[in-house]
Image (cartoon, rainbow over all chains, first blue to last red; front, side):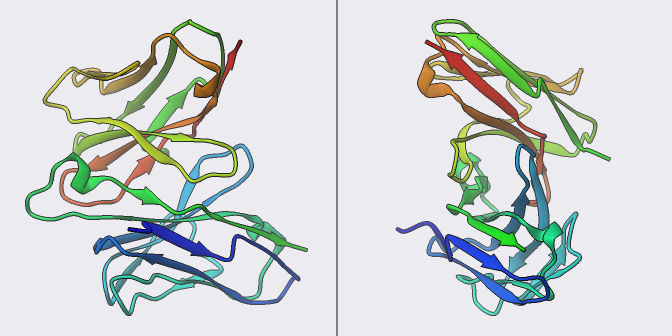
Length: 118
Length: 112
């Protein structure tokens, strides 16, 4: 299993440009998440999804959009990029089933996308 | 309102010493408490986790202590090594939903 993969690894955008951060997981997880991490700070939840076709806002959704058309993919769309969106973006996934269990509940993170908006 | 409060923000420990990081929460619906380790330039990775039906869980040099009545849990790293230098996040998840609430992180520096 590749786990959670993210592309691109790095990107520089100009103010007002748009882009899509890609996230794919091959673990058949139902939950997927997008977080941002500013330098020296913790993780802030942007959006999450509990399954294909179902998404919901996290703490900091403004300026972002998501879609979940398949179990595997959860792209994050930035419209009209702003310097405040300069950050490292992490995608994560987890599985929550009826059986539960520690490993079944664990979040697995991707390697991150480092985005700079100038 | 921050659901999980973590301290200290940074920690310097000598090699061989004990590193202790503390977290506190208020939501009694939380039933799963993982700790994540993050190295520079990498994503967080699960280190160890505990459920509230036990007061302690140990995996190698890493131990979680859990105090349900005080709504506190802590990570203890015994015989700390320079390779343990990383940022550590505590988190909590409610029993009925896989939404994780993270602490603000502790940057640990273990000096040789």
